[in-house]
Amino acid sequence: MAIKVICRNRKARHDYHIESTFEAGVVLKGSEVKSLRQGRGNLKDGYAGIREGEVFLYNVHISPYAQAARDNPDPIRDRKLLLHKKEIKRLIGKTQERGYTLIPLQMYFKDGRAKVELALARGKKLYDKRESLRRKAMEREVGKTLKQNY
Image (cartoon, rainbow, N blue to C red; front, side, top):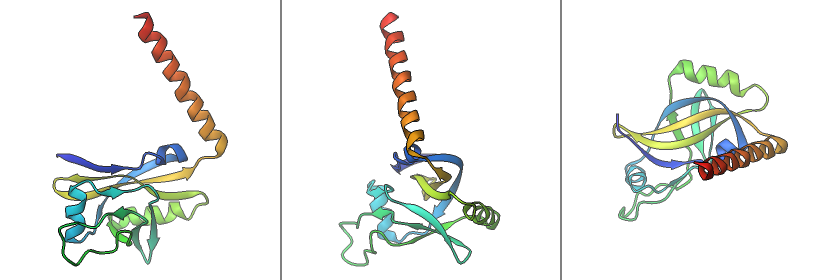
């Protein structure tokens, strides 16, 4: 199973506590697939939501494919995600709880098909973010001292 990562949402792990992750297929148009193969996707402000029993991906930017003369869809259109019905029902139950949201962590090709790794996440408070930054800085310092000593 060859996995080629297209783009990652680096800020997601900083802004959210990740509870669990899901892999979902993405319904795309031909020129969007070609654009993603060139690595021209952006998950920065993206999120997922449930509408009429189906899961959709919002605010994910896929740049228009330059060689497509026409038929380039809107770069930030809503894209349907492909999940099993059991997974969708579980996500509906979880997202109705206060504070939970669905965010894309990364987009990649797996066996030639575009996939999105979705995370069921809860937003971090400002003091949580500071704490994680402090922890990272301390780990970096310990790594430096160990490296200098050996």
